[in-house]
Length: 456
Length: 149
Image (tube, rainbow over all chains, first blue to last red; front, side, top):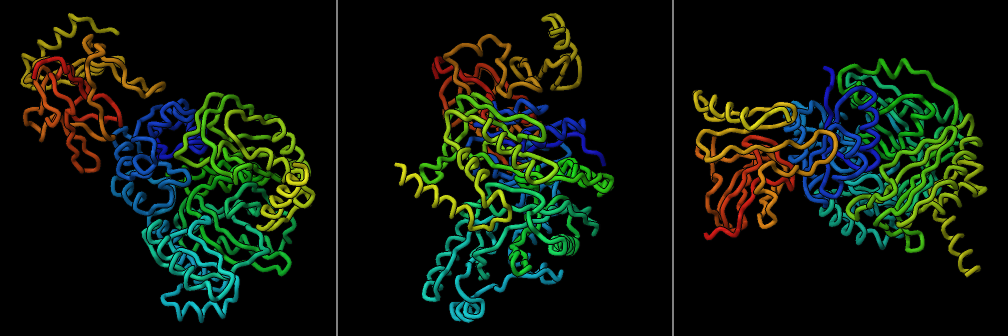
């Protein structure tokens, strides 16, 4: 069936992003906004706004009943959950299903399978996708045995976690039991699921993920990979496609593994299969699947020419992958910087407040996804993403040159931001060569601190 | 607005003569809610579709009186003025209320949340329509606290 009105169950730049494609498709939009977001940019771009609750997300964006009620009360036929908030909560998808609302995303069963990291490991195993050594632990004795086999350092991860949350690095066997107990207690409190598992820790690996689209009937396609190795405390800062320096053979193995995983789930919608890749040993293993649109999807859109939000809507309408397959594959490379309202001088603490003035860049091959304008207030209740600057070029050198110029052109006054850090990374020789691993940014930050001390 | 006071009087007379108790009418963005059992007809302008979400000031002059206290929706949901269909409304315009007086119900996914007046006074204006979606913070009705309780 064709979708006529979509409830956007999100805020910020992704709400703007969804509204833009809906407008292109002639679909009406209703923004479910918290009190703090009533006058936000997305609120001005949609057909209608309904206020679902106070600013704190636990009383608004995280209330499945309020969002479904808002969709029903405004006669929406579909709900786009964006990323974060309720986007990967199986019970939200189920509530939509129960009220005959189209959830623009996977089925509730698929969300449950991807969200439970142990269940996802089992799917990977069935699909013949390599896994990092590890497994679930039920007792200290079994944990010690398993840990000896995996070797230290290792990670204690929460079955209900993901995206870098609920993870602990354990360096020595004598720290294992305390880490397990703490991780289980924290996971129980944070995710309502105290199950934890052990996984080998790869200190010099790259984070490479594959964008997939599935029609829900077992047909899946990929739109290439993204390298998201520039991370600070497991949070991605810069993403690019294609992943620099991967052999054609390794790249194809990653794509195939992602397709096998998604096909095994008969995955419906847009999703991302994440891997850790050891390029020197040409080795890789499954990390997790993100069953939603990703923050970094624009780099894939830039090189593939596919509007991923439009593809999500088409799949939700039951049109399958026809549109996606019709697209051609332009050549090129794209890189994205996430501009966050956080203060590098204070350990990247969030820096909410009034944006007194902002100037976003423009230029050939440059795209900006943002909800922030001069006069926008960044509330303290939500993530600190101000916007994303994406540069596309015929090769990595051109994309990088365009991105450097674009970042240099950007000004944000009123709130602290990580713009200067982005300039440093883009100018850095190691990043410019390409193929840095996930430990890169921490090393760069240390160098910055030392340089500041010398000059200070 | 294409409706005149005479039109509204005419519509009211049509309702009087009909077998119906309530009439909801929407013409060019103007919403009229008429109720036979009620003491007065509430006329309110709708929320414009594209611009702001803030409830538009009521056309009833008294609502602009700064002394009036608004009772706002504590959550988004479907507003009901009566405990069940066909039952008399919890309150009508002119009725005296105590802070604990129930003035309506907001349903969210079959969960009924009672809304209380929160203020002592007299109901001066009922804004939210029975059975309509109300947003968080939307004014449901206003109370004149100057009225002796």
